[in-house]
Length: 158
Image 1: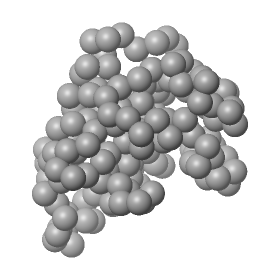
Image 2: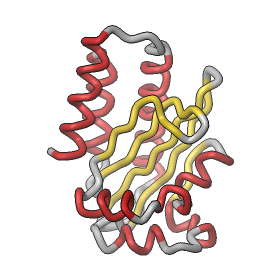
Image 3: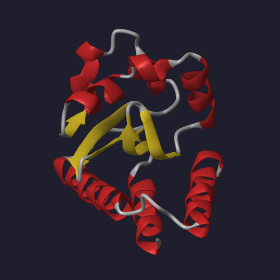
């Protein structure tokens, strides 16, 4: 479990504008969800039901690998990424991983510039490791579930 915590901390440190991570998605619901985006943005995103229109999510369900948010502009018919920019998430990358018959999708943001290829590769490496580390946690002890829940609360409200 400490490996998953360390990976989440590293991903958090690399995402100056925050992130949203959905691990092991079944249908449209992730088994674990972590987000560190601006709280006001997260509330607006949820209240407006933007998940269904989010080009990061749409791309993530149909693709694997990485893509910069700027390359998703044509898929952003509801202006989700434009709205996110108003909350400091101007640039970012989407990452989708499918391994072990499980899909995980994440968005990582920066307020100031596009991420470099090296930064994206580093995020992808840690995200794949997080996917793999949590893949075997289908049956978790209550202690591990509580640790993940606390980490989620920390990232969301911290």
